[in-house]
Length: 83
Length: 241
Figure 1 (cartoon, rainbow over the protein chains, first blue to last red):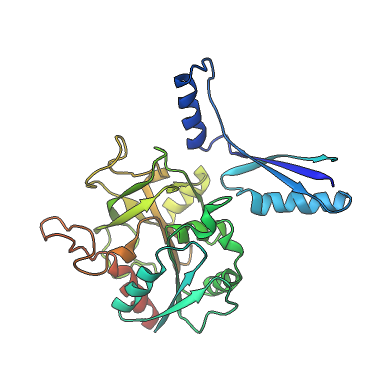
Figure 2 (cartoon, each protein chain N blue to C red):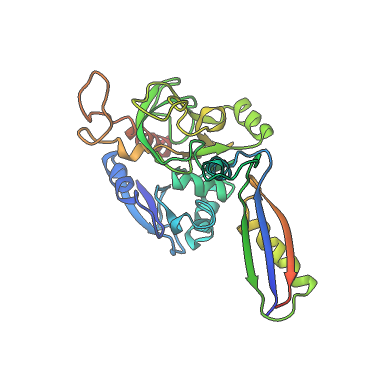
């Protein structure tokens, strides 16, 4: 079954408190030299049947309306993986 | 006067909101997220909580509940709609109100009695207050940081659509967050739409409606604060006006 992978990230101008928390914890565990961390989301959508252009367009719409909030987030990639 | 309060899976504060409606003198009507109708209510409150566990984003899934189609239509038709905390997040996700809420800048859950300056007393939900009045109501949230792009913020300021702004005088809070509890842009605690019938705010007026159960009122005794009741009496005045 083909899989469509959607990545969503907080917009660059939006403060990312979760990324900042991770960045603050890294040196405490001895991981040095990391300037910053931003945390996003990965969605894996299993698709029934072939991923046509039409299906992809509809998934793009889903990504931009439900999976992300365009006020604070960007859909940075939508990729098809054949399983 | 019938005022509806919507319960979603994971809503916490529906009972307090129904009680606030009753104490203000209206008839509270419990609405369910799966309802296709609004039972002839004249105003709607979306209460606080963690609808759908805040999965995906706070308010993101509630937006697609059947009852929300009716609420959005009614709001666009001028019906007063109030979103409190998670309800405010839902109103932003439906785009009835601009902006969005992200995690508090200090990354902690915060719970305290919060002073707010009432800056717009023309909305359906604030006309019982005086312009510039500072009220004190509870605040409790994890994702309370209001954000919007600069153009939207400028528009809100120019049009007087910042209804509530965080004011000084909270009793405690993380260092750097004594006044603004979460890093919200422009200290914004609540906003309205252009028509003034839809209002959203992060703090909780429904928890400050009855003496003995509200915030401490400085100089007036313990738990005497009822500053939140004005929001519910405001909508009654709006509906009879």
